[in-house]
Length: 173
Image (cartoon, rainbow, N blue to C red; front, side):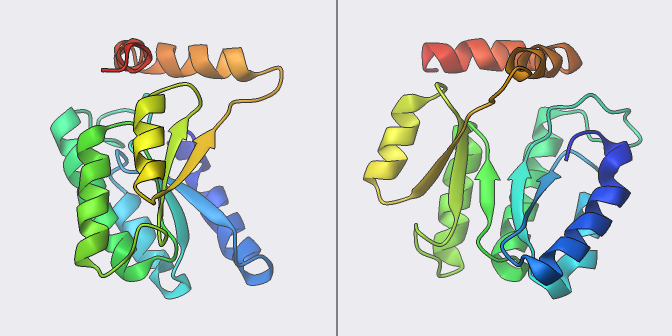
């Protein structure tokens, strides 16, 4: 799920798809102010969710802007997913958030195979290997097709902090 204007239609499609295809997974952005309410509305479905911080530029009325606020909401939603969700996935390269997800899973009585960490191909390969070696499920996301470069540049342009993050990740920091 990209920009906030797509949320109502995406949620409606997710609700419909899960009735026929229960393995459908919904991507949700932690940065969006509406996300906790959207998830609460889906709680009866025990949704399969891919939680990401959110890389799209949104106005302050729609999305939290500060790193600490976004991280706090991400952590809150991690806890929510271990209680109300099914097979949660966490799409982040943020070591603090990955450590939090691992600890929250243990606290919820979930093993390393009962959730997934998702990372972009080529970024933090050392972390991908360490997680895999420790028994965690790791999925690597590969932007594919003719639009991979526009996808990358759009993410960088919409939130310039992503460029710094991307360069740090390439350097392994």
